[in-house]
Image (cartoon, rainbow, N blue to C red; front, side):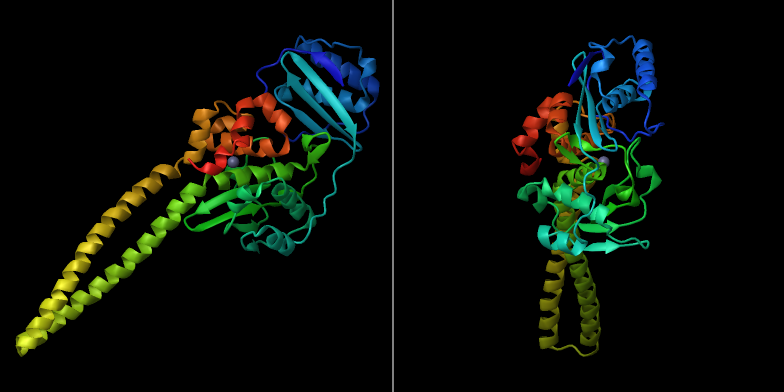
Amino acid sequence: MLFVTVALAAPVYNNDEITLGFDDPPRAALEAGLKQGLAAHGLSLERPLGAVSVPELVGLFVATSSDVREGEIDLQLRDTRVSVWEDGRTLKVASAPGGPSSTAGPDMATLVERYGLGPPSTEGGRSWEPQVTFAIEQALGVLSDAERAHLAGIRWVRRPRGEARLRPPGGLHAATYVAEGLDVRIEVYDDAASPTTRFVGTLDRPFTPATGVILHEIGHAIADSALRELTVGFETQRAEHERLRQEHERGVDALNASITRYNARPTDAGRAAIEREGERIRALGADLDARAHTLETARVALEASSAVSPLALLFAREVPGACTSYGRTSPDEAFAEAFALYHVDRPALERAQPAAVAWFASGKHLEGP
Ligand SMILES: [Zn+2]
């Protein structure tokens, strides 16, 4: 391990996709580029460059490039993994031998069976390729049973790509969590199977970046659990209200017909029947009014919690900050980013947002808001 003393901003885990503009770079060129980068940022190396391997030089070179200076870089090179991260005023680099991890997962039916997933579906001519099921299985494999329980009933949908407006900056658009009323799904896109220069996780426990994205989306699903319950409750009440409304309408029509018949030929029995039926319809109407009131209250509660998940708000209150730049965009993203990092790279979360590790370890995300 090499330590390089630098002064950087507060650590975050920004591990974005990087395009390496070289193949087999000559050592001298890397050293020259790194020295230039260090000088441009007023940084200095703690040790002679001679103690740094070529893959580590690549990592340092990338880390000191102006656009990726903040954060952690986990590079998957041809046969070496390199991590560069900040530790106070020190930039650390470490590497380990190892090529890209295997990318063949089981078929989707096996995953559904093994993990009790909701029904899968393919749209747009895609199938559940082995690279995609590999990432999904990696993600499911790090979850606890209690966490996986939140995925019950959620559909898994394979689509070519997601909506452009939902694409996260600098990252793969490998998946999205979508909740539309009672239709709740995790969509997985072509990016989940695209080649990458990165890994997520630690040197001895690497994951493909798509695994991190899928865990991020599962984080949204967990944060959204309470809202899904509210939605199911609201939709059930609404359906029952509609059923009773139609019954009331038919009852009123039938009562009016009875009254017309009675007026044409009044009898005591007819009068008693009309009074009984009138009473029933009035009671039904009163029940409908009360239900309409409850329904409106449920609708307001649903709308209030639709904007931001209550669990994400609780997380934001108890664990300030965010572990990535993307996480800073909203409480929901802060929660999802921390949830994913907690599962793939706990040491990185410990560095970027230490309170989050204790928060997830105590199971607060499973208690509900
Ligand atoms: Zn998100």
